[in-house]
Image (cartoon, rainbow, N blue to C red; front, side):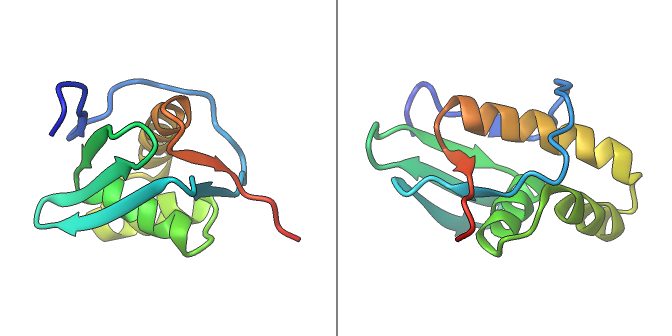
Length: 109
């Protein structure tokens, strides 16, 4: 894993809500499920990121076309935490993933 790899065990940053924004993984990103969560690899830059199980749920939700509110509700139910708390953490994760070019807005035709 590169020196710039990131691990999202607990996301403490707060980002503004993105509403029902529909996102997708960037076309140059591949993912691989691992026991602890998920590895993301940007094939263009070679950078690698390691996400925990919640981060993995977010990426899989994006792959399935779910919006962020739906993903937050699913994670909140699965882990027994408040949806608003989960949503703030997901917003922070998505902001980082956007900044790194790993996710982008989805255009539905």
